[in-house]
Amino acid sequence: MQLERRQILMGAATAAISACVDTSSSAQSAPAPKSAVQNISSQEGIIPGKDLKEKLDNLEKWGFDGIEFWGGGLRERVSAIKAEMKGRPLRMSATCAGFEGALMSDQQSERDKALRTIKDIMEVAADLGSTGMIIVPAFSAQTKLNHIEGRKILMDLLPLVGEHGVKVGSRVLLEPLNRGEAWFLRQVADAGAICREINSPGVCLMGDMYHMYIEEPSDMGAFISGAAWLHHVHLASIKRNLPGQDARDFRNGFKGLKMMGYQDFMSLECGVIGDRMVEIPKAVKFLRQQWAEA
Image (tube, rainbow, N blue to C red; front, side, top):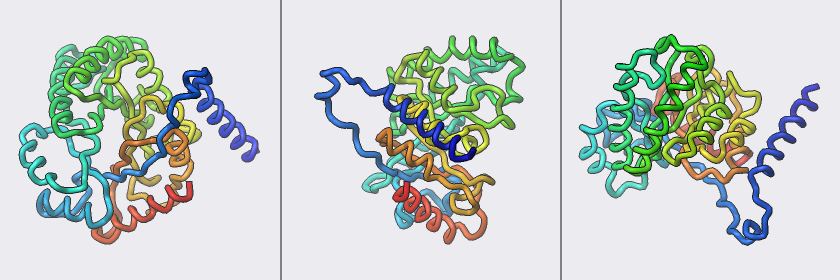
């Protein structure tokens, strides 16, 4: 039964990839897709260090490729971040939330607040060369709307967000969460359907492998379902700790990222059991090994 289920999932994944391939003569002459790359990043707060310089030094020493910053208060830090990042191989990955209100709130004032602050952080994210700004439409406690009402409001507001993103050179990244945190937007395919309907380069998505472990039948299938709009990945173990600190296997998801020629970042968003100076470099080695084996 397990083998049969795996074969079904693999077949579905292959079909999804094939469906995205244009077999016309013009497509056949187009360049081949890029080979996938593994750019490992981390949220700033996870990395030990008395200041940003020390955190960046540790990231470089441990073989990271980027850093993910919290969006709240980011505008006031732009000059300091640029100065400290200058000349380093590290790049800024995603900008994580930090906005006020909620786009899917039942309160107009909260929706207005979210729209205004999201636009502001998107501008800062563009200035810093970020992959995009991560947003959750609403956590469960932030709205009393049902699915129909909530989706209508979200689909009315996202084109405005996307238009602003295109204007300033940024994008939002819709983040699906697990059922314990949000009743709306729980799978990568759901986010992909929204992105397809909005049809704007300013509205894309990400996948969080902690939430995906709870909600998705297949990591690979989930990534493939959102491949056209996927621009960031969050990494955490089953218990939301560092990759490698429990039985969570990332190879199935990494195989999907390789199939689509993924070019963006995968970033630590998790807790740490033990000494961070010891455990974080171990997690990087674990992730590199899982990628090689995928």
